[in-house]
Amino acid sequence: MRSAINGDTVSATELLPLPSAFIASFKVIQMFEEIVFKNNYVQVYNEIIGEGVPIICIHGFHLDCRVMKGCLEPVFNALEGYRRIYFDLAGMGRTAAPPGLSSSDDIFEIVCAFINKILPGEEEFILIGESYGGFLARAVINKMRKRVRGVFLLAPVILPRPSDRTLPEHVVFERETGFIEKLDFFDRTVFESNAVIQTYGVWRLFKQQVIEAMNLANIAVLDAIWNNSYPLSFDVDSFEEPFEGASFALCGKNDSIAGYKDALKLFNNFASLSYAALDRCGHYLQIERPEIFAACVIDWLKRIK
Image 1 (cartoon, rainbow, N blue to C red):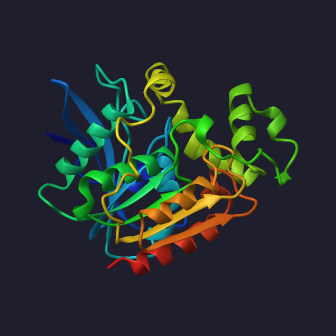
Image 2 (tube, helix red, strand yellow):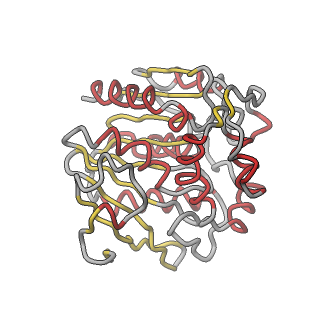
């Protein structure tokens, strides 16, 4: 069952905040998609913008679709022919954690069910995954390879266990004083531990796309998954043969959360992979260096057949 919010189509100004440069230039379909999970139902919140080739956008752990929409819509607003499908993972954003949700396997099961529901049959699509979403995106390719035309991995989690990752030390390259000291403890801690460019402009977007999303997460459920069952039960990078679709892995060279060196292993599985590690960029490089991020996305889209 598909249910719309305030009608089938709503104005962009009624949704999550978007830069004024592209508000009112499109219509957004905002709805919940009902998915069966362990003899129960979960209502997966999603937003669809544009028409054309479907693009499934998967956000990171504890976040929601606004982190994807915030960085991608400024890019796609200038392009035609793409249907962006943003959705909130189970237990995050406006998708509630259904009874029995206890592992990344459960989250991935709901992702696959959502894709099959929103894109029935064998319809092909493009994937964009950020952080944990990049981990899940590779799992989707592992299970739905023939349907995936290309993938963009943004600061992707390569190794699910943090102790296994090769990580640089957290450093700060730019910091504006005045506003940070006025933040509450949670906001300041998250911002200072993630951002390597700590200016007010970066903070403003970080608050909209990261902090406000974290405030909606089901922390009890997600912390249990993080502590006990964050890795999937199968190796997402165990490919029978390399993936031939156009691929891009974009990392921050100063990303102390997911790192950048481990992503070099992706060359083993992705035959048409472009890879970049941006200096002076952290885990949220799309916020710190939006112009470079946009250029990489456009380059990748041009390579998709």
